[in-house]
Image (cartoon, rainbow, N blue to C red; front, side):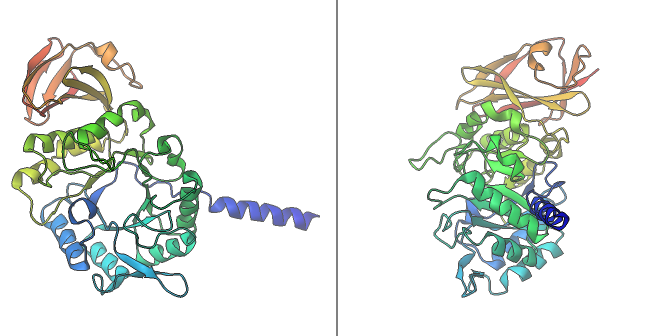
Length: 396
């Protein structure tokens, strides 16, 4: 009888050993680059190497961006044993060699797959091959896995992602697990136990305020969808409003600035989606802004909440470490609009934890790098269409 009890206990403990995600990863929102927004299916190993080189040469890696992630269309089939087959025309050296190159540049390497039978571009998916694929990715040196949800049939999203989570853990290599079921089953309620970040919306488009019949939409539409779920963010489990479109040509420079600002206010993963090899200087300045990145990467890990929506003007507040807070005043319209911020500290900080009200606060304009008085006086002015005013408040 004792032997049976010991055997059962061993089996239970063994099962629990693989029933978890890797902890200690993505304690701040992941920062990196993904191939899809700009290159779509036109990817090859030379392009990826050039992007890795550009990540270093531009200083983006020094700013904190570290992942080079391939999206869909690197895979073409499975062999007779079920192992995933890499497109040998576009990736003749194989994924292990490409991962080694990315690692040699001091960066990390990411791949894409899908929980369904096929990926969104109808390449082989991971359904039924989770443990085999996870082992393969670990052998290749993968550091980040984006896992989509196309062609999933009647699969349950929680069960599907749990299977892949356990497979990754069993493979033994710490891999950031990015869940991408587009917010269709409210992943903010459950995916924190499965992965390190999870998409909260359908795909982003290279525009501010537009929609396609497929559901894809601009960054301001996606921003609106983050309003009710801001409390689910935190270290190791991030709401993911999709990759950045900054620098892809569809946004004005003010829209690029505002898009990046609001993703930093959300504590969103900062996954670039532009061609790093050919960036305007003004785009690089946006993406490398250390003050903005510090707001996104603040170790408290809080997302901003919308304090006011008044016609075309939004005011968002975010708690930061050191008894500081960030305030973003966003003009959602295409036209210049006046704004007024009345510093009702009690109301504006009502959701903040461990907040000590120290009276009036100094106001720092983050983008313009200048002082703007204190909260003893109301703040008034005008904002150009689609512009944003980003402030950090510190106690006197």
